[in-house]
Amino acid sequence: MAVACCSRSVTGFAGELDFDTSKPDGTPKKLLDTSRLAATGWQPRIGLEDGIASTYTWYREHGMRSDQKART
Image (cartoon, rainbow, N blue to C red; front, side, top):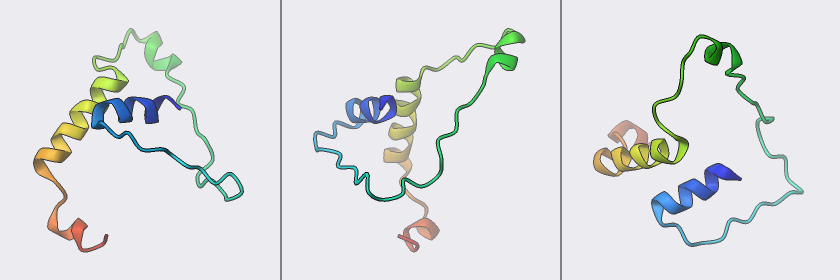
């Protein structure tokens, strides 16, 4: 689980993740096919871990909007 691993190192989360495999896991896995995009010469400028770190930093600095807080 690459995203969880990257997220842990970015956020400093040291807890355990416990998945209940007897329950449905939500949306079926979808994979993005970037081959047509790559064929145009496009390359990502930001790696996965850097993107997660940047998003996490932005979120910590800006937090949730007040209308989002009411829903949680």
